[in-house]
Image (cartoon, rainbow, N blue to C red; front, side, top):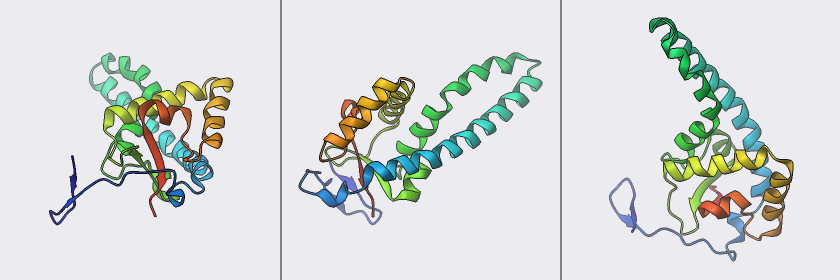
Length: 159
């Protein structure tokens, strides 16, 4: 299936191969910086959600406050909205010139982006899993980490 650009012409997705090294050059370090930026964005996003739930709780005489546990998933929601959106990247990734595509060059969907983020956060909560996840990224020529391989995503330089 091909995509359509804004003027209506059809474009076939670019198949990414390890031979296209420019797409992967410096991606791991850029991802690290992008994630640091995204942590700030997630904190702001969580603060906004917290305030909305607080107001909703006041308006519903406390019933809305049962939504507070959902704040634990705000990082996954942030990634699902941004990576699964039209720009295919979080705000930090955009600042670092990165975007996420499938290995066939297609745009990720929201469910896949949420699963991708969830797998990352599961790995991040366990030092050994995080170490293995990052080690896989250093070992592979295309710099795909373990959670990228599971959902068949590739983080590439967008510039």
